[in-house]
Length: 249
Image (cartoon, rainbow, N blue to C red; front, side, top):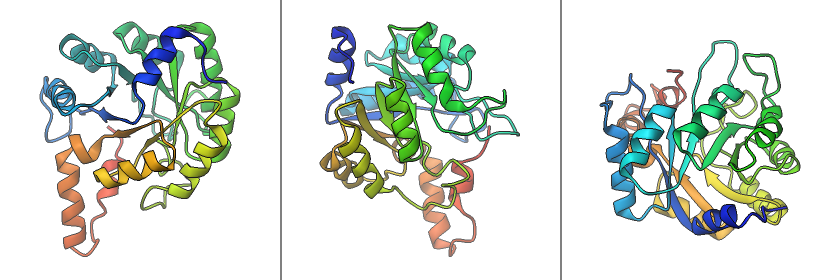
């Protein structure tokens, strides 16, 4: 069931029908500067965003100092032996919480982690350790969404659709799956859309299908990937821009 905690419920309801902007930058991105994520977040707030999604304790703290919006925090950690990279262990969970994120995002897929655990097992452990936190489950399919619901996720989104071995071939959002997710789980958790949204019309379609809110990142805050999409098409799909989007850093 959806949370009955008044504080959590007030925050979650404040996001309804809103845009959450993912403000992230890696040190090997061509747009990297130390204050880039802060500028992204300031621009998102100016535009009317209801929350920010941010990566790493360092960037979360920097944004919190300048922008008064709720933060969905995560910490990307890459290993060569796994595709699990979003908040993979309790170390990252604690660090995100201590940095000030109100909401913690973590991989809730059935993939095996670098530590040889199943990624989705972390949710239950994290909820027990941090009962005051709100948890955002990044999943890739309906089975994982159902498992996240059963283990108490407050928010569920198909963020990792396209980032698992089973879904790596995809070319866009699966609106039919998302609509099914909204219908089946809307009374149990807040269903949000994240991933493969490139226009305001894409985002509005998801609200129409039942999304509580939408998260948009690359199309707003990563202009080098937007440019690469254009180049990919103009060159006859010779250099797939998704390879850059999915790159390990």
